[in-house]
Image (cartoon, rainbow, N blue to C red; front, side, top):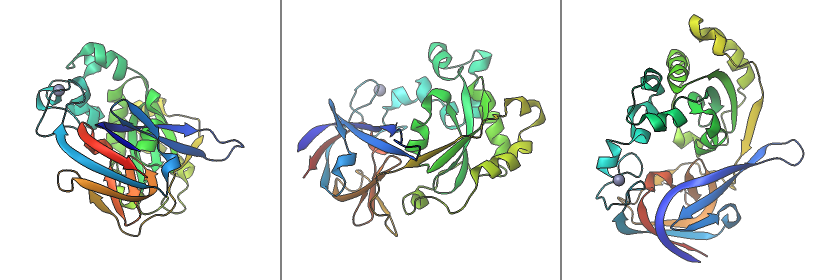
Length: 273
Ligand SMILES: [Zn+2]
């Protein structure tokens, strides 16, 4: 099979377990108008070829470089979805009526948010809009996640996260995430209970009492010992036998990995054998 089109972030879903076990992450590669279920191509040869053109995923204009994972520069500096609060939720000012686009922020920032703990490369704390669960966790390659706090907007969740950063990482270690299933023997429920009193006094009311864990398994046949990240700016041809899909990465037999999301907007030719 051969498809050429603009690449965007992989779509994911968590397939509910049939008998109460872990959910399975299912991946869909979106390229041009196609939406290819990828899980079934494990062990197949996949080649990705960069066709030397980048288009903004918002406005479609040609751009020499992609900003903020898929945008042209004018969109990057003006759209609400590329504003600083997306990376740093504590900077969100939508609750004060300040935003690049208030209509967008009503839908995205002034909605219920979660502060969560997850095991991906290591133990981490993060923030996400309620409707982004479990997508956000799959995008980070989390093996397990639990909700720590629920807030009515993005800013408050960011404030709690900032208070916890002194005790927990807020970054995904993608290298570790791609070389092992999860860090060993960390009891997320115990971590949640221990970290509870680090939530600032005036925000204790947002603590989330439900200790339900979300467990996610990924379509990975084999974890490489060492990974080498390839990107189209340096390697216009990438591929090999697909041995895994995790986070937004394809993992190949030789240990090379390719971040699909990072290449949103790149015109790509994909061949699957
Ligand atoms: Zn644009």
